[in-house]
Length: 190
Image 1 (cartoon, helix red, strand yellow):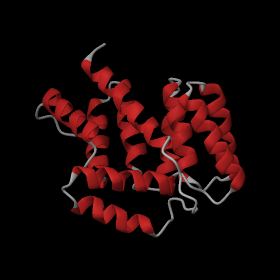
Image 2 (cartoon, one colour):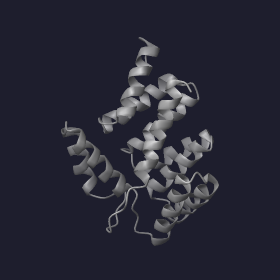
Image 3 (cartoon, rainbow, N blue to C red):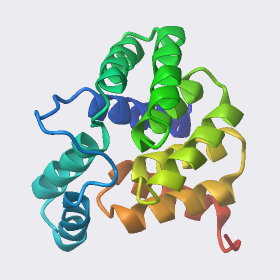
């Protein structure tokens, strides 16, 4: 397996693992007021442990919705995705975006499943829906970078990973992609 493809797989597995962390009892989503402070602290910290904890808190908030049915469908979809039952996961996330269309993470999870199923155009469409609702969604932006890599659009991939790092400067996989792509592209303009 080529090094770039192996790194892509590791990055996707990291994003999937972030989906599996337990949720606290409170409800939130991309509109939660705590996010601004978490993003500010994420930019201020140089401590890797704190950055990891802050990133996980952001993911936890993003994954929450006050719609009980959407919450059940998110859990069902995440479990199916973790078990690599992508058809079941897609069905669950379809239901999430149907019942909670303003919930950014529902779109992001469906984008992830589409990516895993090699439905790259559908994945990109869902990423754009995610970003319409949460422009700071570094996971969605990184996912877009992965799609651009799959499509051979290395300049666009580089731009996406750089943008993700501006939002969350502690994304080591994105930083690795930036370094590889900058070397590969040399002095070409982004």
